[in-house]
Length: 261
Image 1: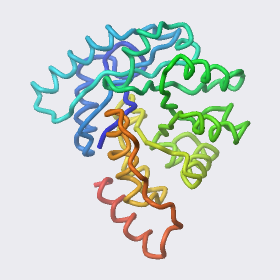
Image 2: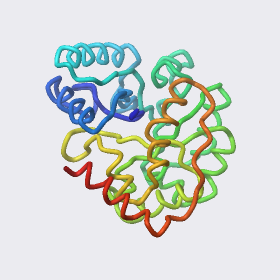
Image 3: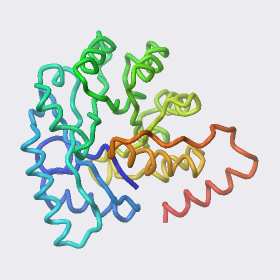
């Protein structure tokens, strides 16, 4: 699997506090079959990170993982707050893209009073940035205006939902919206948004299986589509969206049990 949204670097945001915690978090991800992690530390007014700081952190963590023989490829990226992105230069935003690819992971505002989201995103797109929207299922602006996300997608933006949202980690409303977005074909990738091994762990498959997302869609959202996003290629044709078959639940329960062991 490829995890496009993962707070792995130590001591620079609300993820691991030190290198030992980063290594433990990467080990936990590897045990869940994650092969590639994009280290997306916050870039915001609160966490004033930059591309150089993140690149140095990636090298430090990658060196430790090689020494520990943890089979995870770590790449640089960032989760850039919308208000901060508007202030940064285009060169800096290019340097913050996911894994040297063309996509910028843009944090959808989580504050209820955020205004002008569509206009701000449009401005960044007009500057030439390809935007992957992080956790839109938790964005109050998108809750208030159900037609907003389809408009943004029509303008070329893509989505990265948090796997835990499908399992109710952020409450029933977010869980239900995540499922509706999936059923409407508005989910392009899923990531863990991991911060630690307990409260915000790096799981994806079990969380999606618990929501009865079909196995072929789990592969698409956690591997095939993320690979294309990193490579800058066209997204592969997704599996068909069909109602669950009568026998599907049993297979998904077996898959879920596998990742609970």
